[in-house]
Image (cartoon, rainbow, N blue to C red; front, top):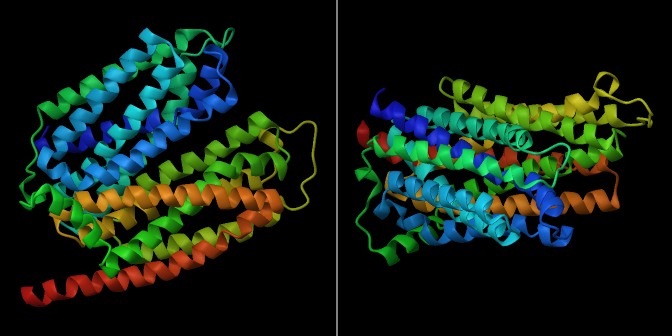
Length: 416
């Protein structure tokens, strides 16, 4: 296998491992409550132990990662997580679980910056960059889907609190070791990622990026997208339960259609974006999202509770609305690809640091706002209001397209 293909495989596998760990929080919370005897309030802190280190570490180390090297940074992140995973079945304690998620958060900051920055080194054109980015993000979603099945396979159905479920971490630790071995025998030219700046100047480069109109418009676009995705992802089970009157278990299962749609949409987007201009693809996706909202939510009106609801007679809205993920899916990775392709490769690490921070802000804001809307209005109205950020995102895409064309104009003129 050529070195470039091995590197792309390593990026995909690394991203999938972290997808499984990052999205295992719900399952782990359930297990530590039953197995370690902690309260729900204590268990709920695991989300913060994961998310805060991601944002803090991305902000602090992103701009300096080119000095360490992206391949080495990924190996370091996998090694740290592998060690933390082996500690879980041996220590069997809640404090070890908190330590695991802190390690996962810090390591994911290293990995995400390295993966996104490596894509720029492995592709030569904006379309190839967008296609590979969407493909890798698609496999990330596959990792999320696989996480639920992997963790469920190790849970004792007769004794849910049985610590046998911790053996899942041996599997993940082995996966980490295998990918580290793959990275160790793979080479990638990272010379274009280094600019020779001192550490302090590299950190300041991140703030200098905020002075560029292109970056400001992109960050607004990314913020709006993550706001919408997190709002739907977090509150769709509640919508299914309260508005569609599905049983609790079916409400959660039906929400999985959204994650599956995101995975298919990103993998499919990776193919389409290699052949079509990003602006028209994303604009079409945003319009299709709005149409789907206007089509699906009226189906949810006047749904009456029934005692015999199951997959075969659930309201159509339970299947139609989550398909919005098909159209949402290509947007986020393509936005990231567009801005990274427009910047020098030596700035990709710093830019990815900003991407992670603003994505975290968008996700937190989206979940909070939608939660408030659910509290004061019914769920249908809450989701109808997603049409506003969709409209704003469409405007932001127009501005981003103009900014990228302006940024590339001098280079085109020089080349002619």
